[in-house]
Image (tube, rainbow, N blue to C red; front, side, top):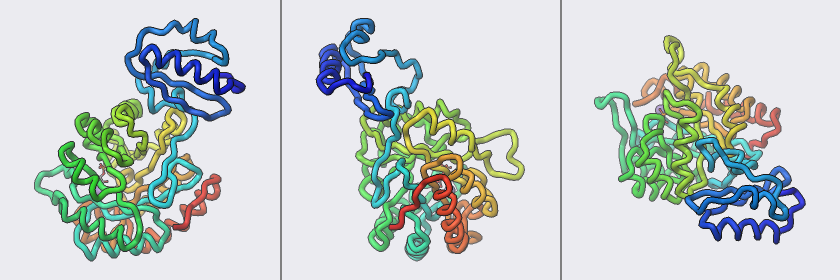
Length: 337
Ligand code: PEP
Ligand code: MN
């Protein structure tokens, strides 16, 4: 719609297309109103629509992904989780272990990262391990421990759900449902988290293109769950001798351009080497990520999973200071909770 279009003109267009069976998504931003159409309505006469009072332009969104596209919704999507607003000027940090290992471990980490300024607590209770012989997670017991840690610190919980049949169980405890890299194209799971009433952290598959990631997000969005965060966590390339994965800094910049969804960076899995997690974290802030998810452990050598990439608690604390400075340098705020 034209920037000066009146409410009545907007309403008239909405009534016209809804009368033809289309669903509308209205977004206001960049000084104008965009009426996005979705569904399977009757064919529309785009010339007629284009001539309606107040209409600036009508176009077919040819990108395969629509709901996640900035064409559909020019302004950033932001939503509140606990005391912070993801996708806003606020830069958010999620910290915690790869896996919940024990009550002592998760409570110690939760208290320490809270003190260092983290905004959410991560920890896997259901773990997607490359080997079936590796630790598979504590299951529901781990979820209960996460809930206890939230009780103690007030930090919202981010935890992975691996199967559609577990979405309702994990949703009882979690504040954010994590879909892991290995499950990015598990469409039954994407549909299930799309129907859940929880924000979703969708990790990029190891061999997924940005378009694949956006199409996976589209599954979730198509169910009306708009609270989706995308997560860059490193991809597989030809070079895996030194770093565990290749962290795609480009991808973060590109995603911020083509989608309105918040983008979270995971340098822990992205580089996989503890001593490089700080530099990659700062690069992520600089390139425009909306937040970080960082693995941290009181004793990484003893960690049951991903110890090589987990920060110690003092390292996490030190990094928080640097992240704050970098966030402020790129005009973000680092909320204190
Ligand atoms: C994790 O967050 O611990 C994890 C398993 O991540 P990913 O799915 O990115 O490998
Ligand atoms: Mn991990």
